[in-house]
Amino acid sequence: MRGAPDLHLTDEVRDALAEGRPVVALESTIISHGMPYPDNVAMAREVEAIIRGHDATPATIAVLDGVPRIGLDDAALELLGKGQQSIRKVSIRDLPYVVARREHGATTVAATMRLAALAGIRVFTTGGLGGVHRGAATTMDVSADLTELSLTDVTVISAGVKSILDIGLTLEKLETLGVPVLGYRTDDFPAFYTRTSGYAVPLRVDTPAEVAALMRAKDDLGIRGGISLANPIPVEDEIPHEQIDAIIDQALADMDARGITGKDATPYLLGRIVEITGGASLTANIALVKNNAHLGAEVATAFAAG
Ligand code: PSU
Ligand code: MN
Image 1 (cartoon, helix red, strand yellow):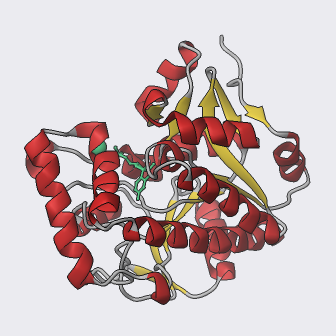
Image 2 (tube, rainbow, N blue to C red):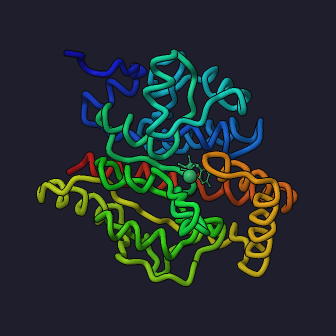
Protein backbone atom coordinates (compact mmCIF):
# COMPACT_ATOMS: atom_id res chain seq x y z
CA MET A 1 0.00 0.00 0.00
CA ARG A 2 1.23 3.44 -0.88
CA GLY A 3 0.57 6.38 1.42
CA ALA A 4 -0.65 9.90 0.78
CA PRO A 5 0.98 11.87 -2.04
CA ASP A 6 4.14 13.73 -1.15
CA LEU A 7 2.95 17.34 -1.48
CA HIS A 8 5.01 20.26 -0.32
CA LEU A 9 2.98 23.15 1.11
CA THR A 10 4.62 26.43 2.06
CA ASP A 11 4.22 27.38 5.71
CA GLU A 12 1.84 30.22 4.89
CA VAL A 13 -0.43 27.96 2.82
CA ARG A 14 -0.37 25.21 5.44
CA ASP A 15 -1.24 27.68 8.22
CA ALA A 16 -4.01 29.35 6.22
CA LEU A 17 -5.63 26.01 5.40
CA ALA A 18 -5.32 24.77 8.98
CA GLU A 19 -7.01 27.93 10.24
CA GLY A 20 -9.74 27.87 7.58
CA ARG A 21 -8.56 31.13 6.02
CA PRO A 22 -9.06 31.79 2.28
CA VAL A 23 -6.46 30.30 -0.09
CA VAL A 24 -6.41 30.79 -3.87
CA ALA A 25 -4.60 28.35 -6.16
CA LEU A 26 -2.77 29.56 -9.28
CA GLU A 27 -1.41 27.55 -12.21
CA SER A 28 2.09 27.51 -13.69
CA THR A 29 1.58 26.55 -17.36
CA ILE A 30 0.44 30.13 -17.85
CA ILE A 31 3.88 31.17 -16.53
CA SER A 32 6.09 28.74 -18.47
CA HIS A 33 4.05 28.36 -21.66
CA GLY A 34 1.40 31.08 -21.70
CA MET A 35 3.43 34.31 -21.72
CA PRO A 36 6.95 35.49 -22.65
CA TYR A 37 9.70 36.14 -20.08
CA PRO A 38 9.99 38.39 -18.09
CA ASP A 39 6.33 39.54 -18.31
CA ASN A 40 5.26 36.08 -17.12
CA VAL A 41 7.19 36.32 -13.85
CA ALA A 42 6.03 39.90 -13.25
CA MET A 43 2.44 38.74 -13.84
CA ALA A 44 2.84 35.84 -11.41
CA ARG A 45 4.14 38.16 -8.68
CA GLU A 46 1.45 40.79 -9.26
CA VAL A 47 -1.30 38.19 -9.10
CA GLU A 48 0.02 36.90 -5.77
CA ALA A 49 0.16 40.49 -4.47
CA ILE A 50 -3.46 41.09 -5.51
CA ILE A 51 -4.58 38.00 -3.59
CA ARG A 52 -2.60 39.07 -0.53
CA GLY A 53 -4.20 42.50 -0.82
CA HIS A 54 -7.54 40.78 -0.16
CA ASP A 55 -6.11 39.10 2.97
CA ALA A 56 -6.13 35.75 1.18
CA THR A 57 -3.15 33.44 0.63
CA PRO A 58 -1.89 32.67 -2.89
CA ALA A 59 -0.75 29.14 -3.69
CA THR A 60 0.98 28.96 -7.06
CA ILE A 61 1.29 25.28 -7.99
CA ALA A 62 3.99 23.45 -9.97
CA VAL A 63 6.13 20.32 -9.74
CA LEU A 64 9.78 20.91 -8.82
CA ASP A 65 12.24 18.02 -8.86
CA GLY A 66 9.30 15.67 -8.84
CA VAL A 67 7.64 17.21 -5.78
CA PRO A 68 4.22 18.86 -6.21
CA ARG A 69 4.61 22.31 -4.69
CA ILE A 70 1.62 24.15 -3.25
CA GLY A 71 2.91 27.70 -2.93
CA LEU A 72 6.13 28.85 -4.58
CA ASP A 73 8.83 31.28 -3.57
CA ASP A 74 10.24 33.99 -5.79
CA ALA A 75 13.14 31.89 -7.06
CA ALA A 76 10.74 29.16 -8.18
CA LEU A 77 8.59 31.67 -10.10
CA GLU A 78 11.76 32.91 -11.81
CA LEU A 79 12.84 29.36 -12.66
CA LEU A 80 9.45 28.54 -14.18
CA GLY A 81 9.27 31.82 -16.07
CA LYS A 82 12.78 31.68 -17.46
CA GLY A 83 12.84 27.95 -18.16
CA GLN A 84 9.97 28.01 -20.65
CA GLN A 85 10.70 25.24 -23.18
CA SER A 86 12.90 23.27 -20.74
CA ILE A 87 9.97 23.01 -18.32
CA ARG A 88 7.50 20.32 -19.28
CA LYS A 89 3.84 21.31 -19.69
CA VAL A 90 2.11 18.96 -17.26
CA SER A 91 -1.53 17.99 -17.57
CA ILE A 92 -3.13 15.12 -15.66
CA ARG A 93 -1.55 12.35 -17.75
CA ASP A 94 1.92 13.83 -17.26
CA LEU A 95 1.78 14.21 -13.46
CA PRO A 96 2.93 10.66 -12.54
CA TYR A 97 5.71 10.87 -15.13
CA VAL A 98 7.33 14.07 -13.82
CA VAL A 99 6.94 12.94 -10.22
CA ALA A 100 8.51 9.53 -10.91
CA ARG A 101 11.39 11.08 -12.86
CA ARG A 102 11.90 13.92 -10.37
CA GLU A 103 11.49 16.50 -13.11
CA HIS A 104 10.14 20.02 -13.07
CA GLY A 105 6.67 20.58 -14.50
CA ALA A 106 4.41 23.55 -15.15
CA THR A 107 0.88 22.48 -14.34
CA THR A 108 -2.15 23.15 -16.58
CA VAL A 109 -5.60 23.98 -15.27
CA ALA A 110 -6.36 20.25 -15.02
CA ALA A 111 -3.19 19.28 -13.13
CA THR A 112 -3.37 22.38 -10.93
CA MET A 113 -6.97 21.57 -9.98
CA ARG A 114 -6.01 18.05 -8.97
CA LEU A 115 -3.06 19.15 -6.83
CA ALA A 116 -5.07 22.00 -5.29
CA ALA A 117 -7.81 19.55 -4.31
CA LEU A 118 -5.27 17.15 -2.80
CA ALA A 119 -4.03 20.04 -0.66
CA GLY A 120 -7.58 21.04 0.34
CA ILE A 121 -7.85 24.23 -1.76
CA ARG A 122 -11.26 24.92 -3.31
CA VAL A 123 -10.76 28.08 -5.38
CA PHE A 124 -8.37 28.58 -8.31
CA THR A 125 -7.93 31.53 -10.62
CA THR A 126 -6.34 31.64 -14.04
CA GLY A 127 -6.67 33.32 -17.46
CA GLY A 128 -8.27 30.96 -19.93
CA LEU A 129 -9.66 27.46 -19.70
CA GLY A 130 -8.71 24.76 -22.17
CA GLY A 131 -11.62 23.35 -24.15
CA VAL A 132 -12.77 21.74 -27.36
CA HIS A 133 -10.45 22.82 -30.16
CA ARG A 134 -11.78 23.95 -33.50
CA GLY A 135 -11.77 20.95 -35.80
CA ALA A 136 -12.10 18.57 -32.83
CA ALA A 137 -14.58 16.50 -34.85
CA THR A 138 -11.54 15.16 -36.72
CA THR A 139 -8.61 15.80 -34.35
CA MET A 140 -10.46 14.83 -31.12
CA ASP A 141 -8.40 17.54 -29.40
CA VAL A 142 -10.38 18.26 -26.25
CA SER A 143 -8.49 19.63 -23.24
CA ALA A 144 -8.24 17.44 -20.15
CA ASP A 145 -9.25 20.63 -18.30
CA LEU A 146 -12.85 19.74 -19.12
CA THR A 147 -12.77 16.18 -17.80
CA GLU A 148 -10.99 17.41 -14.70
CA LEU A 149 -13.79 19.89 -14.10
CA SER A 150 -16.18 16.93 -14.04
CA LEU A 151 -14.09 15.15 -11.37
CA THR A 152 -12.49 17.58 -8.96
CA ASP A 153 -14.18 19.91 -6.46
CA VAL A 154 -12.46 23.16 -7.36
CA THR A 155 -14.04 26.41 -8.59
CA VAL A 156 -12.03 27.74 -11.52
CA ILE A 157 -12.24 31.44 -12.32
CA SER A 158 -11.31 32.29 -15.90
CA ALA A 159 -12.14 34.95 -18.49
CA GLY A 160 -14.01 32.32 -20.47
CA VAL A 161 -12.76 30.49 -23.51
CA LYS A 162 -10.88 32.14 -26.32
CA SER A 163 -11.97 31.60 -29.89
CA ILE A 164 -8.86 29.57 -30.74
CA LEU A 165 -11.30 26.99 -29.36
CA ASP A 166 -14.81 26.08 -30.47
CA ILE A 167 -16.74 27.95 -27.78
CA GLY A 168 -20.12 26.39 -28.59
CA LEU A 169 -18.77 22.83 -28.45
CA THR A 170 -16.86 23.61 -25.25
CA LEU A 171 -20.09 24.74 -23.58
CA GLU A 172 -21.89 21.61 -24.85
CA LYS A 173 -19.14 19.38 -23.48
CA LEU A 174 -19.27 21.10 -20.08
CA GLU A 175 -23.03 20.53 -20.00
CA THR A 176 -22.56 16.83 -20.75
CA LEU A 177 -19.95 16.59 -18.00
CA GLY A 178 -22.33 18.16 -15.48
CA VAL A 179 -20.17 21.21 -14.81
CA PRO A 180 -21.99 24.36 -13.65
CA VAL A 181 -20.87 27.22 -15.90
CA LEU A 182 -21.50 30.58 -14.26
CA GLY A 183 -21.25 34.00 -15.87
CA TYR A 184 -20.12 36.64 -13.39
CA ARG A 185 -22.36 39.70 -13.83
CA THR A 186 -22.95 38.75 -17.48
CA ASP A 187 -25.56 36.99 -19.61
CA ASP A 188 -23.11 36.35 -22.45
CA PHE A 189 -20.30 33.82 -22.06
CA PRO A 190 -17.01 35.77 -22.30
CA ALA A 191 -14.41 34.95 -24.94
CA PHE A 192 -11.18 35.90 -23.13
CA TYR A 193 -10.04 38.95 -25.14
CA THR A 194 -13.65 40.07 -25.56
CA ARG A 195 -16.48 40.35 -23.03
CA THR A 196 -18.93 38.50 -25.27
CA SER A 197 -18.93 35.39 -27.43
CA GLY A 198 -22.48 35.44 -28.74
CA TYR A 199 -23.22 32.33 -26.63
CA ALA A 200 -25.59 32.78 -23.72
CA VAL A 201 -24.11 31.99 -20.34
CA PRO A 202 -25.91 28.93 -18.90
CA LEU A 203 -26.20 30.34 -15.35
CA ARG A 204 -25.62 33.83 -14.02
CA VAL A 205 -24.35 35.05 -10.63
CA ASP A 206 -23.73 38.58 -9.43
CA THR A 207 -21.85 38.24 -6.14
CA PRO A 208 -19.04 36.13 -4.64
CA ALA A 209 -21.48 35.06 -1.91
CA GLU A 210 -23.75 33.49 -4.54
CA VAL A 211 -20.80 31.47 -5.87
CA ALA A 212 -19.90 30.31 -2.35
CA ALA A 213 -23.54 29.33 -1.69
CA LEU A 214 -23.61 27.32 -4.92
CA MET A 215 -20.38 25.55 -3.93
CA ARG A 216 -21.91 24.58 -0.59
CA ALA A 217 -25.16 23.44 -2.22
CA LYS A 218 -23.20 21.26 -4.63
CA ASP A 219 -21.25 19.75 -1.72
CA ASP A 220 -24.46 19.10 0.21
CA LEU A 221 -25.99 17.37 -2.80
CA GLY A 222 -22.93 15.15 -3.09
CA ILE A 223 -22.30 16.31 -6.65
CA ARG A 224 -18.61 15.89 -7.39
CA GLY A 225 -16.67 18.10 -9.75
CA GLY A 226 -15.71 21.69 -10.32
CA ILE A 227 -17.43 24.90 -11.23
CA SER A 228 -16.44 27.16 -14.09
CA LEU A 229 -16.88 30.82 -13.14
CA ALA A 230 -16.45 33.02 -16.20
CA ASN A 231 -15.45 36.62 -15.48
CA PRO A 232 -15.37 38.97 -18.48
CA ILE A 233 -12.23 41.01 -19.18
CA PRO A 234 -12.65 44.62 -17.94
CA VAL A 235 -14.21 46.90 -20.59
CA GLU A 236 -11.13 49.10 -20.80
CA ASP A 237 -8.84 46.14 -21.57
CA GLU A 238 -11.02 44.45 -24.18
CA ILE A 239 -9.76 43.83 -27.73
CA PRO A 240 -12.74 44.25 -30.09
CA HIS A 241 -14.01 41.24 -32.05
CA GLU A 242 -13.31 43.09 -35.34
CA GLN A 243 -9.63 43.11 -34.42
CA ILE A 244 -8.99 39.82 -32.61
CA ASP A 245 -11.08 37.43 -34.74
CA ALA A 246 -8.97 37.92 -37.87
CA ILE A 247 -5.77 37.60 -35.82
CA ILE A 248 -6.92 34.33 -34.29
CA ASP A 249 -7.80 33.00 -37.76
CA GLN A 250 -4.31 33.96 -38.94
CA ALA A 251 -2.67 32.22 -35.95
CA LEU A 252 -4.75 29.07 -36.55
CA ALA A 253 -3.73 29.06 -40.24
CA ASP A 254 -0.06 29.47 -39.28
CA MET A 255 -0.37 26.59 -36.81
CA ASP A 256 -1.87 24.30 -39.44
CA ALA A 257 0.80 25.28 -41.95
CA ARG A 258 3.48 24.30 -39.43
CA GLY A 259 1.70 21.05 -38.55
CA ILE A 260 1.52 21.89 -34.84
CA THR A 261 -0.97 19.76 -32.89
CA GLY A 262 -1.74 18.35 -29.45
CA LYS A 263 -0.26 19.87 -26.32
CA ASP A 264 1.83 22.33 -28.36
CA ALA A 265 -1.26 23.88 -29.96
CA THR A 266 -2.32 26.25 -27.16
CA PRO A 267 1.19 27.58 -26.35
CA TYR A 268 1.92 28.12 -30.05
CA LEU A 269 -1.33 30.00 -30.64
CA LEU A 270 -0.88 32.23 -27.59
CA GLY A 271 2.68 33.11 -28.64
CA ARG A 272 1.68 33.73 -32.25
CA ILE A 273 -1.19 36.01 -31.20
CA VAL A 274 1.23 38.05 -29.06
CA GLU A 275 3.52 38.37 -32.11
CA ILE A 276 0.79 39.38 -34.54
CA THR A 277 -0.74 41.91 -32.13
CA GLY A 278 2.67 43.38 -31.31
CA GLY A 279 2.11 42.62 -27.63
CA ALA A 280 -1.45 43.99 -27.33
CA SER A 281 -2.86 40.53 -26.62
CA LEU A 282 -0.33 40.10 -23.80
CA THR A 283 -1.45 43.35 -22.18
CA ALA A 284 -5.07 42.18 -22.36
CA ASN A 285 -4.13 38.73 -21.06
CA ILE A 286 -2.33 40.16 -18.02
CA ALA A 287 -5.23 42.52 -17.30
CA LEU A 288 -7.80 39.73 -17.28
CA VAL A 289 -5.65 37.46 -15.12
CA LYS A 290 -5.36 40.24 -12.54
CA ASN A 291 -9.10 40.87 -12.73
CA ASN A 292 -9.72 37.18 -12.08
CA ALA A 293 -7.36 37.21 -9.10
CA HIS A 294 -9.50 39.87 -7.40
CA LEU A 295 -12.63 37.80 -7.92
CA GLY A 296 -10.90 34.58 -6.87
CA ALA A 297 -9.85 36.12 -3.57
CA GLU A 298 -13.41 37.37 -3.01
CA VAL A 299 -14.91 33.95 -3.73
CA ALA A 300 -12.38 32.18 -1.48
CA THR A 301 -13.16 34.69 1.28
CA ALA A 302 -16.92 34.18 0.90
CA PHE A 303 -16.49 30.40 0.92
CA ALA A 304 -14.23 30.47 3.98
CA ALA A 305 -16.80 32.63 5.79
CA GLY A 306 -19.48 29.96 5.33
N1 PSU B 1 -5.29 29.45 -22.17
C1 PSU B 1 -4.62 30.61 -21.96
N2 PSU B 1 -3.40 30.56 -21.38
C2 PSU B 1 -2.84 29.40 -20.97
C3 PSU B 1 -3.57 28.19 -21.16
C4 PSU B 1 -4.78 28.26 -21.76
O1 PSU B 1 -5.09 31.67 -22.32
O2 PSU B 1 -1.72 29.42 -20.44
C5 PSU B 1 -2.98 26.91 -20.66
C6 PSU B 1 -3.67 26.49 -19.36
O3 PSU B 1 -2.68 25.94 -18.51
C7 PSU B 1 -4.62 25.41 -19.80
C8 PSU B 1 -3.82 24.77 -20.91
O4 PSU B 1 -4.94 24.48 -18.79
O5 PSU B 1 -3.23 25.87 -21.58
C9 PSU B 1 -4.66 23.93 -21.83
O6 PSU B 1 -3.82 23.21 -22.66
P1 PSU B 1 -4.42 21.98 -23.51
O7 PSU B 1 -5.35 22.66 -24.50
O8 PSU B 1 -3.24 21.36 -24.18
O9 PSU B 1 -5.14 21.12 -22.56
MN1 MN C 1 -5.17 19.47 -26.33
